[in-house]
Length: 209
Image (cartoon, rainbow, N blue to C red):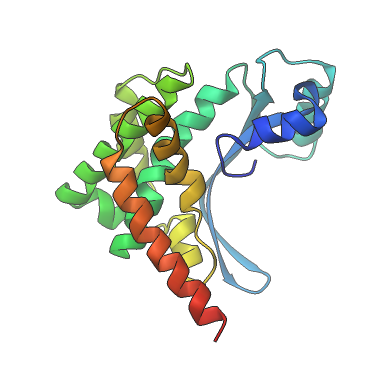
């Protein structure tokens, strides 16, 4: 459940693909103070094997989560699920940090919403380089989903405000990497990446003072 489209593959090379499950989490929550987490919405884990073929161990994980009352869903196409979520993470996390805006402020802004959609187009193109085809209607669905999140602050904005390292490499760097490898450009994600890298460097320098 780590952020990073390529993390499951890295783990699979070490421990074997059949022993590695990829997953995504859908939940709105943030740390209000030490030991206090404010829950706002959602709460589901979608997971599955890298090869799309659930086995006994995979189904055992589903039983354990369900028995514990944790909403979950076993997917036979977890890679597509990961990329579909990256549509949101790559755009909304970056924009929230750079504009210091919560989700509602982003979707209420015509300019920021268009910027998010432009970022999603690059994510979709990057997914295609890995054989994952995302339908264009997911863009509108992602925006519609975001309208229901209200004043929620994306995780990377929470990290910025807490002076923690930023996850721009996992969200935007991978898009740049995959498109560059195939001779394509990623101007939106490249801009996000450069700006977030600068912010991250400043956070690191301040932490060392």
